[in-house]
Image (cartoon, rainbow, N blue to C red; front, side):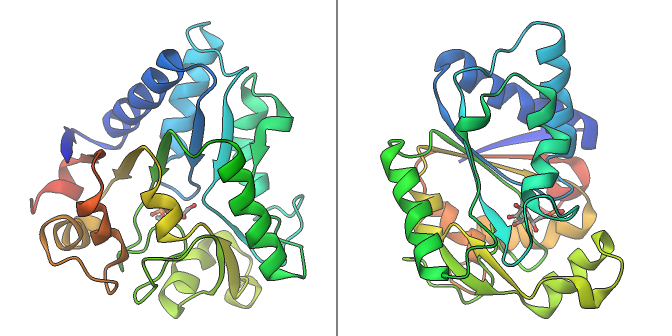
Length: 241
Ligand code: F6R
């Protein structure tokens, strides 16, 4: 595992964007696994800036996002589809037909998940998977206790995740209770993993995930077994390691 220490959120975002940008330059037709949440917003902003300067071309890139709320239509303001378009896809030259997220409104959960795994398989797998980490150690929506061997599946969100995500909704009641997420197996099959983290509230879980026992109780801890993981974090997030 490589650990890259950044000064603050902006520095962390620039360093994460540098790694993604290097991936795109080395393999223009790469498959990027992407994440939503607060952490990668600065990374996407930096990538957009480099695109606007003419330093980055995303025309051949394919993306597969980690997760999507179950039940939210794509145009819902809080859908991850919407988030990704507002923060990234609408601002760069990515081909819309190469953008993939789980289909949140498919009522047949098993079919939606199987189709998503098939898409990733047909693309030849993920070259670089960007991840954030929840304060309980979740990656994607793989909450504590999630089986390591799962592909894309439907999950019930934990109270802690509903609580953390309610800031984006008008009320707690509006936060969806389920989501479709890539499983740990899908994430572990990515050729490279880049986990970005910022802020003191994540320091303890970062220590547990990367230096504690590998256990489903801390889903991110499985990344200790991945052959190519880069952890990029700011001083506050990495101060315990
Ligand atoms: C987002 C995702 C989540 C977040 C995690 C951290 O697609 O799958 O696992 O990465 O909840 O969220 P932030 O970055 O908001 O702290």
